[in-house]
Amino acid sequence: MKKKESEKEIKTLERSRTKKKKARFIPAFALMLLLLAGGVIALLSDSETFQNVFGMSNQTVDISAEEMMESREIGNEGSLVQYVDPANVLPGDIVSKIPQVGKLSENSLDCWVRAKVEFTQPENLGVEKTSLDQSALLGIPEGSWTMKSTADPGTIYYYLNNGLTGQDMSKVVLFTGVQIPDDWNETEVGKTPKINVTFQAVQMENFQQDLTSDEPWGNYN
Image (cartoon, rainbow, N blue to C red; front, side, top):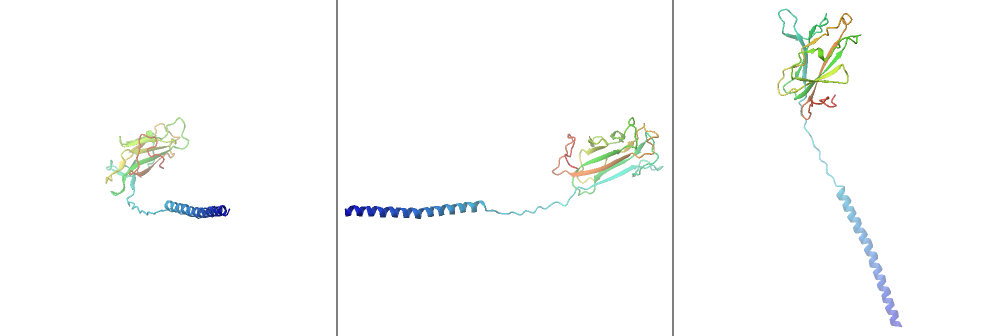
């Protein structure tokens, strides 16, 4: 009887020791998982910062525009002088008006150029009369400019086909004259039609002009 009781006590003691070992193992395993998770977080949160300085060119897009006209002085015909609005213009007359554009300096960046041309009609122009529009512009150099209309019938654009490149500072002529419609009469005489020309330029580098499009410069304004 005593032997059986002794064996029972030994088994109880062994089970107690096994439970204590398991109890010690579980916290150790949990601590190992915690340390592993901490290592992963540290790995994913590592970072480095790079500071870069890009030196920008001091070159710019610089264009120079002027408006000239043929001299009316006797003996000085054929030479060009600064444009002045003419007086006493009659229906059918051709007004000398020569807007032109070029690079401002040899260091100016190569650029695409366009001319915005805006027409203002005489007051109370009859619907049966000829409007002042691109057909009135004379002497546009062949092959130099491409015309594009806009939603506004009074505004058109002329795009310089090849742009301004290199160190050439010579001026490119847009047109040389304006012909007043010959069906205007005393109703239009004395009124003030206008043709305003604005030259615009954008750098060629990283910008492509597409003359096959209705908007060769895209959304550029």
